Image 1 (cartoon, one colour):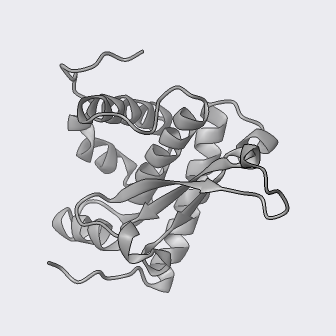
Image 2 (cartoon, rainbow, N blue to C red):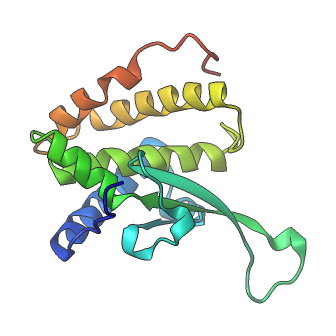
Length: 179
């Protein structure tokens, strides 16, 4: 198993820039105002801020759903879903080493855009969070298609290479149909 290498400070700056751009793109795509966007309760964390059970080998990111509670409220009705996008620095860096044509900024832009689309879909009840493997695969295909739709007209150096890297995820899936 490869050692889990964290992003360095320069890479964190790049990740932050990509995340800011992804938030703006997804917000614009779903036509959400700033106040609507802020109501989406989520956070984006890199390896340095993840607990051991939030670190996985393989995927570039994962979303974990937690139940949030306001500190000043004790009623169960005040609970809300809180989503944590757990970027897997080590997996992202390994992919960049294996695909030298792909650069960090456009790769993270794609990854974060993709994960934010999932969160919007969960929050708008367009998709359930807990589903079986077949529906999860169908949802991945749908979200990759939406990610491509959002990013295809964005001008960012190296983004075309990232879109090509993910092209196979946009192929038709013979499982569950898109609602």
